[in-house]
Image 1 (cartoon, rainbow, N blue to C red):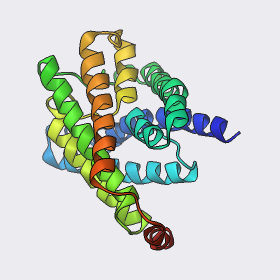
Image 2 (cartoon, one colour):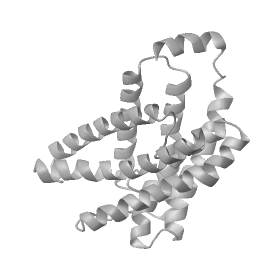
Image 3 (cartoon, helix red, strand yellow):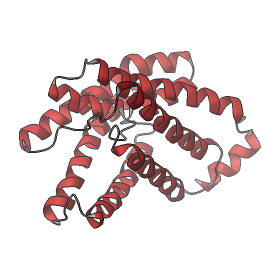
Amino acid sequence: MGLISLVVSDLALSFMWIWSGVLVNILVFGVLGFSRKDTTGEIVGYIFSAISMFVFAFLQKLTRGGHYNPVAALASGFSGGFRSFIFTVVVRIPTEVIGSILAVKNIIHIFPEIGEGPKLNVVIHHGALTEGILTFFILLISLGLARKIPGSFFMKTWISSIAKLTLHVLGADLTGGCMNPAAVMGWAYARGEHITKEHLLVYWLGPVVATLLAVWFFNIVFKPLTQEQEKPKAKSE
């Protein structure tokens, strides 16, 4: 029952994550009337995106490990052992992809004027390297916050949100700065480009390889917490 609940959570969170990005854009550039070329509009958009990340961090905590991003699920599965890794690859990641595709199809049906999702603006190997590097660093930060840095849920989520937004801005003009293969898959599927070499290499191979490298690197460089370290960490949370 626990595994079924986890899969349902992945499906729901993936669906909601795609919708959250669209609703933020509608709120900032539609309801509030900011221009997409206006710096103020971008800042307001980032503020609402940070708020959205707080909401999803709370939902992940509430669902006890639900994910909307395959790289986060893969990192968790890889750290959890062989059975957890296989379950993540065979069940959880496809579920997150399905949730993203359903969300995009639903969005396009309701808002036909909505954009077509992230686009690659550089050559394929440059794009794959960009998405890989961004994914590598955000996972190192996430792993560090989860295992090494004591502090409140609010502070950890704040650090994670700022890091994600910063890395997104750095990669936005190149690949979209996505770091989420399922989200990109949803939009690519709607365009019929989900099986192209460009999509598979840049938005899947790059982040997946970076995920495995990040988990391996973190486990090599940083030793697991001892029982004495775990106790004060648990109290702080």
